[in-house]
Image 1 (cartoon, rainbow, N blue to C red):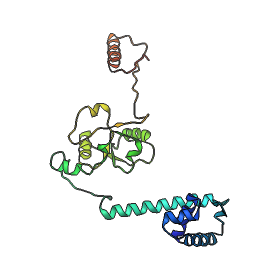
Image 2 (spheres, one colour):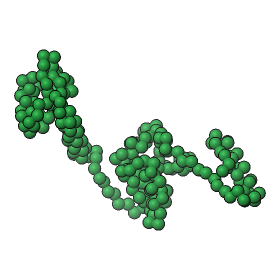
Image 3 (cartoon, one colour):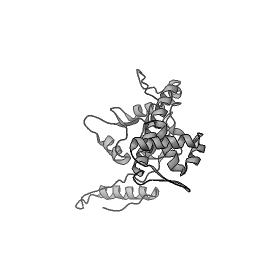
Amino acid sequence: MQLVALKYFVAVADHGSFTAAAERLGVSASTLTRSVSTLEDNLGLTLFERSLRGVALAPGAAPVLAETKRMLASLEAVTEAAGGAARGIAGDLRLGVRSPPLGEPLRGMLGRYHALASRDVLKWTDFHGETIYVQDWAQSHAMREFYASMMGAGMPLHPMSASKQTVFSLVATGFGVTLAQQSQAEASFPGVAFKKIEETNAWVEFSLAWSPQSEYAVIGRFLASMRASAADKGVGASAS
């Protein structure tokens, strides 16, 4: 079974005509017809119903078409990956440094390899294929589990037992990305671009809870201060 025959099969199905598909592919209609007929013989299945008005997908051929498209898409992905590796635009690169590359000129030189910084907002899907650093320690995996619950299963989270400053330094040099709270984004870090994540679950709700039996004046003053701060920032607040 030849790969070209499968491509011809998909083209005919998409165009609804051997003639139109042949013109699109730049081959003769007779060549296309013979190739598809041979494919039908090999599969033992009629793929198209022919008529004067053109062709239509035969009963039972729809699953074959879907699987063929999936396979061709996978092959195209393989070709793109190979091409990227051959041109040096994709692949794994490991650099050893004695300390985090915080300063210039190394930070700026390496930072040119990072592309997400040019976008205004991001979606979770934009992180596919990126190295995502999260703080993580042997005693606690809370942050990694928290971010995984937001981003979904299968995201490439790379745990790091390091300070946020060290993580930011790696991001600044283009080694990967990380997730930061808005408060962290308000403090600028050289070489790091903070972008808003435009997803409904990218917001975190904080709650204050206290015992109703507690009547200490300091608790009341603290709650009043928190409510006032929330109101100033346009954040809703209610007693619990």
